[in-house]
Length: 368
Ligand code: OSB
Ligand code: MG
View 1 (cartoon, rainbow, N blue to C red):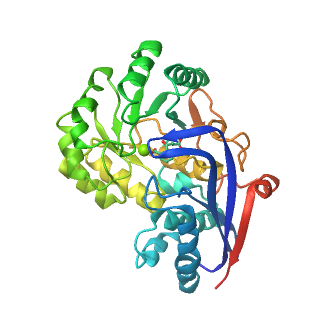
View 2 (spheres, protein in one colour):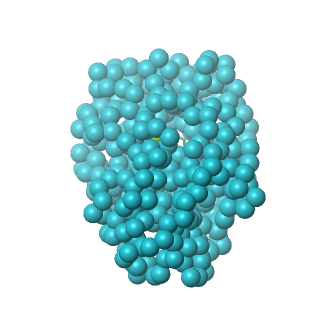
């Protein structure tokens, strides 16, 4: 596979509303896009690293740097047989999974577009639409939260995820249950904001029949999650702790999680994400597709992944309008709580040139 060059683009995408988590508040998404150009096609990958290393150690300037200095030169020098060879080619460079994922996705997209095959078909999708949830940030007040949740339910979202942190956990959950009832599929995400000493407080969530509690403890604390899982009734789900299929197998064996949030960027790409799906399916562990406030490019691939058979819970695959007033692709629009799985070759969507130009803040072209 001859790759003529790779372009790194930075785009600034204002969010429709600030998104607050236990690790910070996002108002504009600063995103690195990767465009891989071959003789037959061009392919796109979206790097999900955030502007500062608060969700994980990766951040967008570091991703751009490692791509420019190491990952893209290694790719251009090697002429890999296809996207399936990219991860091994990049393995000598430690870490930087979000950067690697973006590059592998761009190469895979170019390869699939040239071959006329969709991501969904390539990954093994079994559905043509996927049920969608929405991740609701920490708010200034309970009434503000109830308004936001009510709006999302009215739009048709099939599952609500509340971001929590110490001081914003039992009360918001109780308020949502009291106002919207016990039938709402409800879960919470702590983004590592608790310690094992908080097990008593987290057990106070038990009566609310939550689908899961996502990543209550430190990224490194897999054993702590196993201990916590014995102290609370709500199923523990891991996000930050799972960087690979091997991590998932180990966490499951240790009893640290009954559910896994699969984020392709966090694990180095869609091919590794599929292996996590396979590992979890073989062990009867439910998976769902997470999100990182992606544009339509990343969303297209996430929706394809979420259509695999083991994705049995609604994902954080919300419609474009939940994030951006104007997406860089044709927007993903919710229909009866679902998003359609793109069926055209590759990602099945591409940036709208005028829209992309409006939000691009920098671009660099890398050749061998
Ligand atoms: O922990 O799942 C998370 C967004 C950015 C970083 C981490 C997380 C999130 C979300 C939003 O919860 C998911 C989405 O709607 O894209
Ligand atoms: Mg999470």
